[in-house]
Length: 215
Image (tube, rainbow, N blue to C red; front, side, top):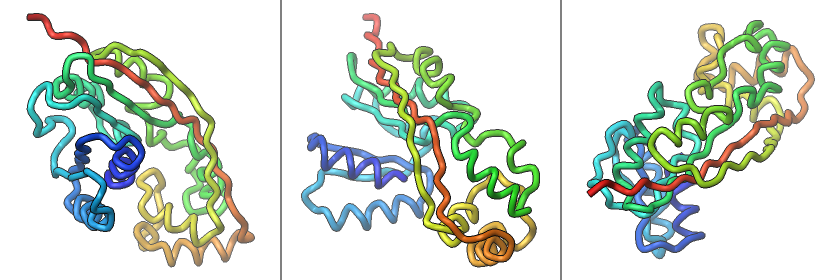
C-alpha cells in the first residue's frame, strides 16, 4: 500500500520530502487520512500511473518500487521511468517476491475445494519476481546489490484467510465468494478445522543507481 511504504520511509529516513504515488483514488484518499495523523512527517501523495510518472526528469534522489512491479505487464517501462526521474547518481530500490510465494495458501484453497486447481495457476508475481528483478533493473539502471530474505506470515485462522482470499485475483472462486469474506470464511469453517496458516515467501531487494546522462 502506498501509504505504508511512504510513511515508513518518511518516519525512518526523515528526508526533506517523500512523495507517494498510486493509480487508485481510494488508496490515495486512505493514505492522506493516515498522513494527517502524522503532521510532522514530510509526506504527500499523487494520483498517477507508474508507466508514465507525472514528474519532471532528474527531480528525485531516491525512487522506491516496493511490492508493485508485478502488477504491471511492462515492469521494464516502470524501471525506465524511475531512471528518468532520478537525479544522476540517484538510487532506486526495487522489492518483489518469489514465484512460489504463498504456496501454502494454494494448498489450503485446493484442500477446501474452493478452487481445486489452485496450485496450477500462474503466479501473481510472474512479470517481476525474485528470479528476474535484477535483470529488469539492469536494463535501465546500474545494479549495486541484490539481497534475498525468507519471510513468513501467519494468518490467525479462517476468518483472516477469508479476508485475503476475497480480493485475491489468482483463484477461480465460485460465484458469490469473490469479494465476500463472510461466505468464504463460512465455507472454510465447514470443510476444514480452523487453525492458523503460516505462509512463506522469498522477498528480493535490488538496489540500483541512476546512470549518468551523456552531455
